[in-house]
Length: 259
Image (cartoon, rainbow, N blue to C red; front, side, top):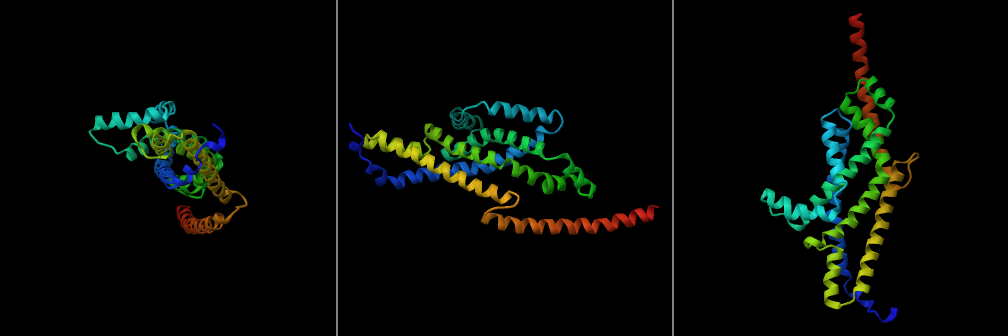
């Protein structure tokens, strides 16, 4: 059977169904990405804390980095749901499984990014009279996010690809949709080639999006996104300097009165 003998028109005939599967995969992965970033940042801060908090975070990170996505989603859908007495939908199970796994990976990304911020920046913020929480969110975290961005993009591509394992619980993502079409048309080569192409194109688009965001955080900033971010950063800097400026006279007055 030659290459031209395959019915390549099936791809266009079923393109809407395949795109719907991709949309489902992206929706699951985007929600899981937001949860994973929040969970990973929390775990990273815990890792940098003192024992036993750091031990708990380290145990979670090491355990879930070793669990495959397929095992994780089965464990959530057929295990945790029975344990808690909650009937998760396949969508919810997919989000939970990805969030549990990738929070561990995000934790290591953020931990290394936080460690990469020079200690002098924290000390400079404290010298200006800023609270520790304000130093973290205004000085340390923005720099850590900039450092972590390239790895976050790679992680998100991995999340989108890992949704393919959720076909085992019936999530109608790209692979599950392709399996259904193959059972109807008996054209596995054509349809799985289309599925592979969809994942590759999605990875390229995601990479471009994250590179644009990285360019916005570069020095000097590049791209259209940077214009929005620069104006926002300028307002935050002006607000911060105004607050610090208003605090300094009060501190000087207090020192004069003490002397």
